[in-house]
Image 1 (cartoon, rainbow, N blue to C red):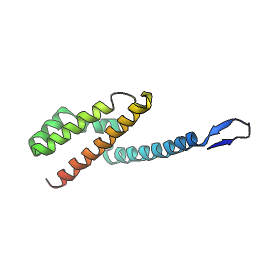
Image 2: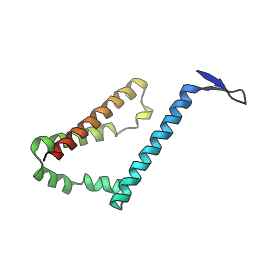
Image 3: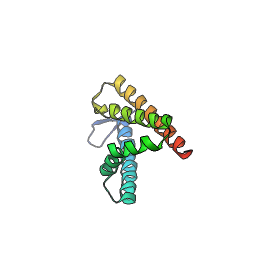
Image 4: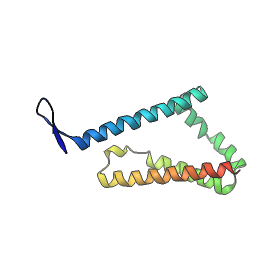
Length: 119
C-alpha cells in the first residue's frame, strides 16, 4: 500500500514498516548488549573476544563432552562464515539464504546451551 505525504511524495508503506521494525529490533539489540556490558563490566566486543579466545576454547575442549564441544565449534565456524560479509549487500535470494543460515546458527547455539545445562 502507498500513502501520500503532505509534500505529495509517494511513500511505500511496506518500506516504512520495515524501517519501523528495524528500529525496534535494533533498540532491542542495543538493550541486550547494554545488559551484557553491565553484567560483565566490559564492552560487548571484549566479552566476545574473551569467550572465543584460544585459551577459553582450549579450556572448554578439556571440560566439555566431545559432542557438545564439536557442536559449539561448528556453530562458531558457522557464525564466522555468516558474519564474514554484509548481508545487506547481497541479492535477495542470497539474503534469504543468509537468513536461513542465521536461524540454523541460532538453533545450533540453543542446542549447545541445552546440552551444557545437562553437563
